[in-house]
Length: 210
Image (cartoon, rainbow, N blue to C red; front, side):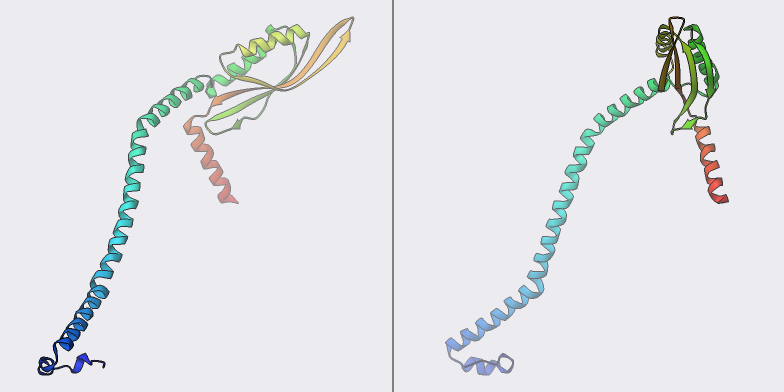
């Protein structure tokens, strides 16, 4: 027989047998347990699970931060080493004022090596960030030994000079072989910050005009 808990009165309950009183008490107890689970226990377990997940994420981040912090001295040493290497490399890049004398040094190296300079034409600079390429188109003629000495003189220069696009032709005149060589001699110069800023401003102006 089903019991209607809403209509149960205290007097009626007191008149019931002990077994029925225990059943009603058990039902009320189960109802309270159900309410406690639904409105108190289950929300708290969900909150606890979320907090545990947040805690695990935070612990992972802390471990990662500690690992990065431990590597900071190593990164700092690496940065200092790179700065030293950069300064050493920049010493081989002349500034704008030194370029004319450097180009003249290339011409002098060819003459001192016994080569006849047929063409010596400085070309437009090509800016590559913090440095610029300064190319010179050259055509020389002479014997193999003269050309070899020229290469050795260029290689021994304190500044960087690259020889590229070499095209050699030979001709025999009175049993003597003469070489004719076309190539591009490229040196490099350091672009000062003021130059880079002015270049950026010019580019912005050109874009606005368009």
